[in-house]
Structure formats: structure tokens, C-alpha cells
Image 1 (cartoon, rainbow, N blue to C red):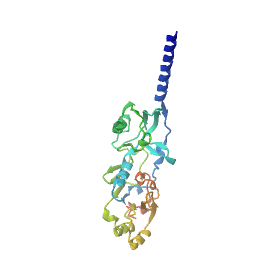
Image 2: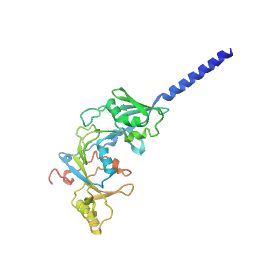
Image 3: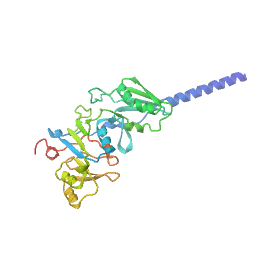
Image 4: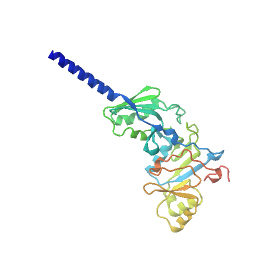
Length: 288
């Protein structure tokens, strides 16, 4: 009798442990806002959206990050109030122990190589990241990717904000120039091209002020020390001063009314949706 009771107790304990492990491995949805709402469509009149503009920024890693952010979009974006918003991933679920993640690709997302984003492409992009965290992934179906880890990654799901799919954004990048991707799923951007100039000579006091006076730049970073006469010329130019976190200042052309630099991290500024009346653009397609 005692042996039977002991075996029954062990059986119940095993069943309980199995049920607890199964419960821990079960998936729960991660709440996501709709990241597509962060990309405001442009509404220019023809041919206002043919403008090609140039901006002036100091060379460095920030410029690279800004260019990448326009051409290669992340799986998730940071939404209003710091919440997570789904962009290339429409749905996200995670196990209670955090070692299993399931990502559902947003359907119909057109890439710059004329294909649609699917689970196979997403898996190929994220596999190096997953491997670096000691995990592995697989495609469950054409729209679903599952990731499994030996231990819970401390950075997930926030790390998905930096996991980017090349060629998924509204601009095609070639070096320091961004050219509009007309088949972008959320609509056409309001500018045909944006080129970033980083020549240090252009950031000297005189040339910098001259660039603003001639309305050469769509926006220009403030270079720092300025001659008083040059600063006076800059103050009368048609630019607004935008103060960003960390002391960075942009002189933003009033022609770009819909551009809103990210004040906490300017490298994450979205250029999509920027447009302006043709007679006001630095590059004027109407010749006015």
C-alpha cells in the first residue's frame, strides 16, 4: 500500500511538473500598436514631389544611422508614449518563460527588390541576431517565424526595435543619397531624393552661413563657433532653430513644414511624409 501511495504521489508530481512546464511554454500575445500609423503619408500636388534636396550634417555614425533608418525598417517601432508598435511584424507572441517567440509577418509588405516580405526572408535576416543570443529559428508557415532560446534573452522584445530588414523602407539608399521608393506600401514620400553632405569645409562659419542664406540646405546642423556677422546672416535666413537632446541644433528650412526631427535621437527621424509647395523647395521643379 505504501509503495502504491508513493508511486501515485510521484505520478501526480510528474503530471504537475509537466503541466507547469507546458503552461510556461505556452504563448501569450505581446500588445502592439499599429506602427504604420507613425508614417504620415505625403500629399503634394504635381510636380511638387519631384524635389531633390540636400542636407548638411557632420560626418559620423549618426549620419549612417539616419540613412539606414530611411531604407531599412525595423520589426517594431517605438510608438506614442514609448509603447511598442508593430511595423514589419504585425503580431508578436512570447512564452511565459521568455525562451520562445513567435513573429507574424505583416502581409503584403513590398520590398525594394520587388518581392514581398515573408517568413523565409525575415528568418534569413534575423538568424545571425538569434544565433548571437544562443537561439535558433524556423519558419512555421509563409507568414510565421518562431524563435527558440536556451535562456531568456534579456533584451527582447525591445531589441526588435533594432532588427532591420534591408530594402524595406520608403527610400532606396545609394551611399549618402536616398531616392524615393515609389512602390512603398504606405504611399509615396513627398521628396524624390535626399542627399546628405558631410564636407567639413561646408561647416565652417562663412560657408555655413552662405549655405543658409542661399537656401542651399533642407536643414543644416549648427557647427558651433560662429563669427557674429555670419550668425546674423543665418538668423535672417528662412530657417527655424530646432534644439535636440544632447545640445544638437538643426536649422530647419521652413519649407519642410511636415518634417519633425526626433528630439531624443535625431538619427531616428522619419523623412517619410515630408513635402512642401514647389515654390518654396530648395530645388524648385516649377522654376519659380
